[in-house]
Length: 124
Image 1 (cartoon, one colour):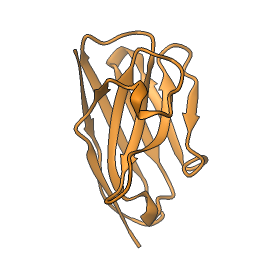
Image 2: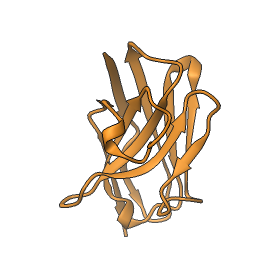
Image 3: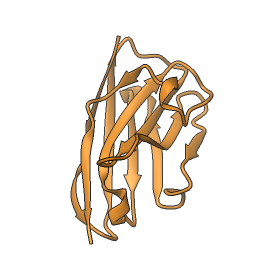
């Protein structure tokens, strides 16, 4: 079993920045990938970004390209999401997720392990 714990959410004004962290513990793995998803009230959970543990290839949703950066620290089993130039539309609960697969990383069904989520609120 893999446990994921997110931190770093909060309230920020439009144009500001936040950094989310996701620490993995338990039966972690050196391959596969980690992803960030978000869910706004009344909307479906959507892909934000993903990173492969091996090689570090990154993938982003079009809505966050150029503003968000996903990174990893393999030694700490931790993934980060640096969010800059935040907009009110970025307001959501952000979830990290883990998978042993390295493909189809924008789909929620690829990830069997999920964190509890952290709230990000961007005020206008």
